[in-house]
Length: 211
Image 1: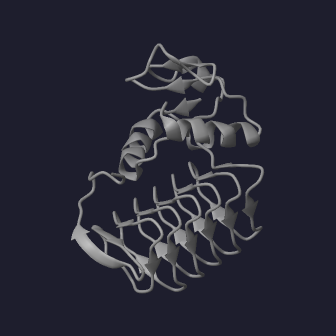
Image 2: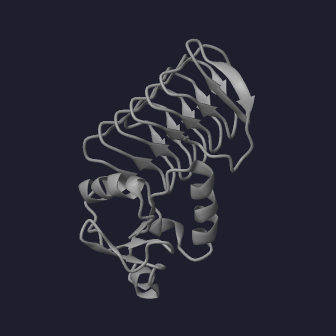
């Protein structure tokens, strides 16, 4: 069962099916009663789904909103029913570490020694190189790439096509703009973009990631 019924949920549905799960329904307060990909959209996760050991996957693209949804879910859903989900076309090195709730989409690559923390997200074709860390609820957008030994802070978003040089850190709740090249460490709670990327403004948790 997928939590969320927006465009990101459509993409995650393909990953869920590729990973070998049967998709039964989506959940969304806003869209309850509708259908998506020929599956019902429910207001909440049925108790019987959880009692039967059913899997739950959060498909909310905004990192901070996904983190908040996770906090609500873990009070009700056991961790073994919130597994990491990996698309069959992704490449995951044997020495990589994936925490519960992580999602790895089509064609993504996770190198040896890299770690995906709780609820983190690797979108289509993204690359997390050796010994790098994608911290809790952080995300790499399609075709975003890190060098080795990079650390991306909690809830931070690396946008489409951005590149982070090896050995650098990006603080928590930061957004790196599309097609940027990060050649220096970035603090938390900022928006940065450009080639090379530079801080353009401050942000706080809850500010929109896109727009």
